[in-house]
Image 1 (tube, rainbow, N blue to C red):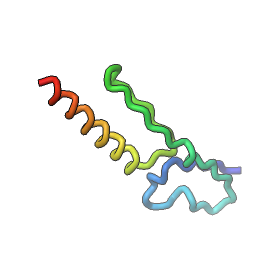
Image 2: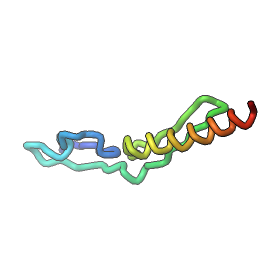
Image 3: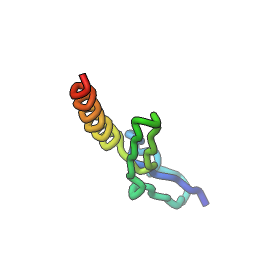
Length: 73
C-alpha cells in the first residue's frame, strides 16, 4: 500500500491527495509548533506548520527584536 505524508498543506497542486492506487495518508497538521531562539540562532519548525504561520512568527519576533535593539541605542 502507498503511504503519503501531508505536512502543513504546502502542496498547492494537491498532488498528495491524488493517486491511481489506494493509499494511506499520514497527516502531520497537528505538529505546528514554531520555536525560535535568537541568542542561539536556531529555530524548530513543526512539519505541520504552514508558510503563513511561519511568516507570522518571524514577523512578530522581528518586531520584538527591533524594539529591543532600539531601546539599547
